[in-house]
Amino acid sequence: MKFIAQRDVTGLTVAVVGLGYVGLPTALALTDAGATVIGIDCDPARLRAIARGEVDLLPLHHAQLACATAGDGFRLTTDAAAVGAADAVIICVPTPVDARREPDLTALAAACASVVEHTVPGRLVVLTSTSYVGTTRDLLVEPLRARGLTADENVYVAFAPERIDPGNERHTPERTPRLVGGAGPHSTRAAAALLAPTASAIRTVADPETAEMAKLWENTYRAVNIALANELADACHALGLAPVPVIEAAATKPYGFMPFYPGPGVGGHCIPCDPHYLLWQLGRIRQQAPVVATALAANGGRPARITERALDLLARSAVPARSPTSVREAPTPCGHCCGPASPPPSVTL
Image (cartoon, rainbow, N blue to C red):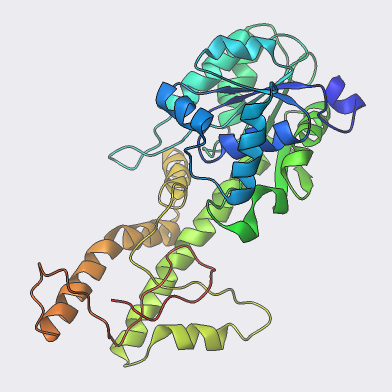
């Protein structure tokens, strides 16, 4: 197979399904590395914004986008059948939760079904969207088998979770290691070769399930530690202490501690959603995870807690609650919600 025989992506055609904050940087990195990329997205407005360069990207990626759209190696389309022209397909679609905080697999299931429908022998399919353990086999490996295509024999399938930290120049994808778990050794090698230009290093694992669980573990770890940081910040407030100096003091320990800072809740696309995929799956097999469940409940209630705190500070300062005037001084700083990160600003609620 091409991916195994060669050590780079020059001359390959890669379809990237989903051009959001994960798919677009992935597509640009591959284009920059010499691949011909077909960018597929169901939203025509998104494609027009990409073509105009009116998308949220770091300066480095804006430069890549300008070069890509100026050449003929980056094509945009809404046609899902365009994957038929590709040597490899990378699926980067959103995996949100619904109103009951259960997995909403609508976009992912549709994308995988379309890719399976248009897959031919010899193609590599890589899933990057965060989901429950077993998703790669359920939505790709088994449906392909039903079509007579066996993973690691006549097609190649892998899971390689995204590790995008949007807007953070210190943690661009190109500076971040990537996990790859294939449906077999050939699939793992093929996916590792394809994704090498998009990451600082590739770490292979035994199978897709290991990579899927690793991604859930990463984001659940963050969710739990955010909840702990908020709880300890409240404890500091009750004891008359400012939490940030306490965190900074604790962070001088060179082992066994990573600083997380208190904040108004859990932001971003991943941390509020991904741990619910784990809880949902564990609930189906009657396995409890009380620490995780409690942390998620605490994070869900955090915005209301911060609102109460803000109203209390406004009342103490004799500022009407509907006034746009901000409170400039307060005993308890409030910082970033997705630590570890730099310490929060001094002007806080």
